[in-house]
Every structure is written in structure tokens, then in C-alpha cells.
Length: 548
Image (cartoon, rainbow, N blue to C red; front, side):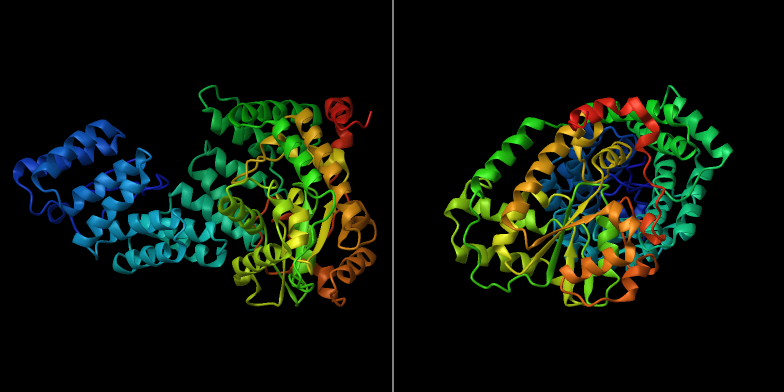
């Protein structure tokens, strides 16, 4: 990947994509330097293009000694700082470059990407938009904007930016895969599959494209594609990160072909590789559960406003247990918006822990009803954007279940839907899934998966005993068997009038960004349970679940 601002392509501060020079040419970017300074700046660009950070810094030192405020040298210096993990210095340096050249699209793009990365979302997006307004052919500007919009779940806007990238640079693989991801999220399943396949046609060794295609879970591979994926997975030169992607893709593709022993072998190997790359300590989870049970043995006095949070439906679940389906059903109702996997509950509790200087849940016993009300209002403030179009919303974060007692105290009017599925099917489905931004490190070992499920099950029984009228079990298998009756019961629990659109959830146009995004675009299927086909191969999981 070329890092040069003076050559054809240079990376964004995040290192995600090339950033081509635009607007100011090389001569203009060197303006104000002596011949020696120009030579040093070009040497810095060449070294950065090759990823030689130390050499880049040495050349930049010579340029900045001559011209400490030179905008292009400062911009490149910021790239070096960012690549070295010195983000605060990178931001400060980019600010100085921006002050010198406020209309430079490369500086605007870099600075916008960094502002977005640091949490200053709207300011960052605005700078990236300005960059592409000034430089409408700036490939990396459109790409960074598209990726940032995807991170904000603004999928339709992201599609427009990524389409522009592909118009300018049709062989931009990362953009094409991102484009396919966005198409999947907005429900354009056939177009998404075609986009993933287009990326594979450009580079058959692009494991991320293969993974994206298979991870749709609704698009089977043909014989030639299976053979190509087998060749990729078997390539001894494939880096571990790519082999993990290819392994999860191949294992799931083989399962779809009913080649179960082969699928188990490949998935086990891919999971073992992933497990070595993540940190997971089951003892820490068990300790947190004990602390939660002690803290909430007697439910605390809740916020005095009994209606606070009545617009919220929390969907609590393990991954791959049907939570996206439940949200899709509810979000098909005209009175409720699907919030997706929000992190605001945990973030709100984290803010309180930081304010008190005591980790959750150790401060629970000291919290007053007014404290809980303040926290409930803070959560509602954080999530107000989701409720702009409709009066109510779902929050289906998969990290909510350990914190249900706090959510109940903060928001006395909120309801909790527990999406529950057969434990073996849930755990096997997790084992088959390579998770993205949320690592779910517990899911890459069958015995650890079983132990995690037991902690979750114990905790959910604990919450049920304390909040029996506010917690509803939505059983996946019952929903498949009696969809009409189960949907009616679900809506009744949530205080919603029946609406037939909830039975036609698969026709909803809402964006979905979870691993089930393509599956919830189809009617209910009763043939998704696969664990029984593996027989004794799943004995370690069954033992860990204490089902034997």
C-alpha cells in the first residue's frame, strides 16, 4: 500500500485505504522548500510508500528543520504519528497543517477521518464531505466517508459514497466488499451477492469477500466456488487472519452441502486459530455474575417515575439465538423503530462507574432512586435519535443480559424480551460464526461456549425471579411452530396493538447490520437447525452444557 502524498496513492490515517493526491500537484505541495527540502520531502514520500516509518521520519526531520510549518510535511508527519499509535500528536499536527492549508482536500480527509475515529462524529463527517466537494475525484475521500457512514449505520448514505469510489476505481477491493456489506444491510440481497462475487472475480484470494458471500447464509456456492474456496483455504502461504476468514467461509459452505464431518473439521481448525488470537477468561465472567447476583439479590428502589423508559423494549439474548428476528418482527410495527445493537446502556453505566471511581456493580448498593432516574434519563438522551421517526424503539445489544437489573431500576417502564433458542443450536451457531466488531471471545471453543451459556442461563433465571412481569421469553422454536400466535403474544407483552405487517417482517425495508441480515429478509424457515447432524462430534459441547 502506497503511503505517499506525492505519488498516486497514500493511506488514510486509519491505514484502511489508499489516499491519492488531488487538487494540489506535487510541485505545489513542495512549494516554499529549497531543492534540498524538496528532495527530502520526496524521499519521505517514497519511504512512507514502502512502509518504512523510521526512514520517513528521518527525511521529514530534514524538511521540518528547514520549514517547520510546511503544510505537506506536517500532513505526512501526522500520518507517521498515527501509524506509530501517537494519535494525539497526529491530531495536533494535522490541525497545524489545516491552519496553513484550510482548503486542502487531503488534509481535510485525514483530519475528518481522525475526528470521526476519536468520536467527534458529525465534525469528522462534515470535513470528509468538504474534502470530496473540493475534490470530487478523491477516491480515498469517498471511501473514508463511506466507511465512516457504515460505522454509523447510515447504510443508504454509505452506498452513495461507495458507489462513487467504484465509479472512480472499479478494482478497489475493500470498497467493493464494503459496498456489498451495505447492500446486504439494506436488504438488496441479490445485489450484495453479486458485489461479493465481483470482488472475488477481481481477486479470487480475497478471503474477506468469500467470507462476506457465505456469511449471507442464504446464497449457496456452486461447485466451482466450493473448489476455489477449498484451494484458498489450503494455500500454505495464506496468512493466519486470511485463513480464519476462509475457514469460517468454507466450513459453513460445506455444512450447506451436508458435508458435516468435513465442515466440523474445518470450523474446528478455524476456531482454534481464532481462539489463539483473542483474550478470554471464563473466570472473570463468573466473578461478574456473582457480583451482580449479590448486588441485585434484592432489587434496588427504582427511579420514582414509574413510566420512565416505557418507550423502550430491550431484547436480551446470546448471539445467534433469534434476537435479530425478534427485532425485525417488532420493527415491522408502525409504532416502533429497531435500534439494533446499541451500546448505550453499558456506556451509561460505565460513565457512572467512572464518576464514582468504583466499577459496576459495586456501587449499586449506594445508588438512590434519584440516581437511577438520572441514569435512565441519560440513557434516553443518548438514544433519542433512534426514536425520531417513531415513538418507541428496541435495543437488542447482546451485552445487555448481565445488566438487566440496572436497566430495570433506571427505566421502570421498559420491557425486556428474552430471545431464547435451544442451547446446543445456539452454541453451535455461535461456533460457526466469525464475529466482527464485537469479538465474542467465548465463542471459539466448544467447552468455553457451554460454560458461557450456563452462566447466561443462570443469570437469566435470576432476573426472571426478580422481574417476572417485565421479562418475556420469546422461544425461537415456538415462534417457528406457531408464528401467528407467538407474534400476537409478543406484541401484547410489548403493549402494541396487533399489526399484520409484523407477520410479513421479511418485507421490511429497514437496514439490518447483524449476522442475520440476509436471513431476516426471508420468511420463517424451519430447517435452520443443524446441530443434530454432527452427532458425537458435539459431545464436548453437550458435556459442557451439562446436557449428558
